[in-house]
Length: 76
Image 1 (cartoon, rainbow, N blue to C red):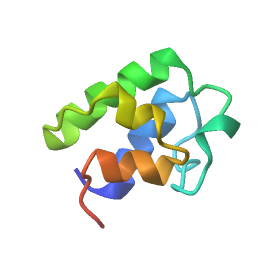
Image 2 (cartoon, rainbow, N blue to C red):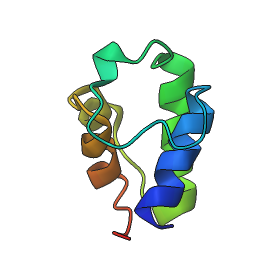
Image 3 (tube, rainbow, N blue to C red):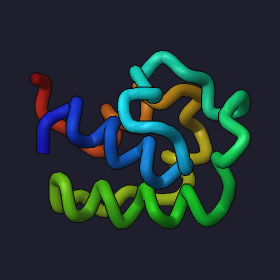
Image 4 (cartoon, rainbow, N blue to C red):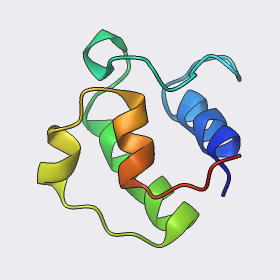
């Protein structure tokens, strides 16, 4: 999965309009970044790249770009 497609999936997870998430957003500033979104992100990362990300690594992320790196998503 390419980065842009991954970000569009993150928009869906967070209930945002397609194209809203660009990567620089701070997770703490996203109203819908909660436990449900976190679980959905884990599933998305598994689907996108086949990676199993430990919860501790996700909790240490501060931006959407950090999540993209953890998910090992391909650049565009």
